[in-house]
Length: 176
Image (cartoon, rainbow, N blue to C red; front, top):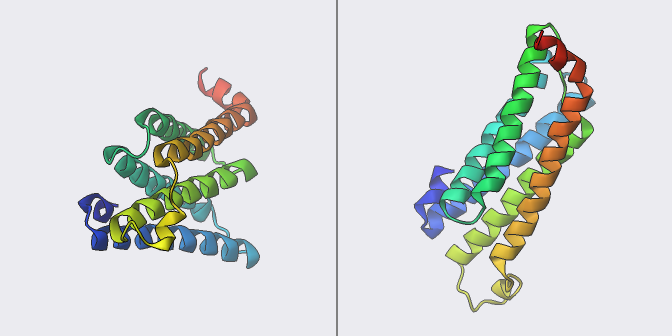
């Protein structure tokens, strides 16, 4: 994401494609791991962690550029640390918590939201504003970014609540 922070058309385009490729390879990797039954405990723990790093760095870059609201990213990052803590506690107790269905949907939504925002910013930076393609992007960008990220934030918080409910007894016992 540091390429995206540079701000020139070439670095932003490269940053966009690197993020896109990282997201797509994560999706393909997960699909093939499940399809061929090569899901491992290490993969169940590290894949969500790698997703969190990718999403978090992208969101922090978007906040620093002023495209995404900091409070939304703070809630998303807090949830990510919280769920990682739950997973770490479970691992300490000998269990592995695989991502729930809604957590997978959350990750896809986060990746799609970030990809969409990066695409619009990249096109704004790289293309002549009078081209027909740019006519498709004639909307209040900040409002759309806020809506997309607001929905993403809500689903992210819901999944944190879902993990809390599912693993409440483990959390409660950890406090004793």
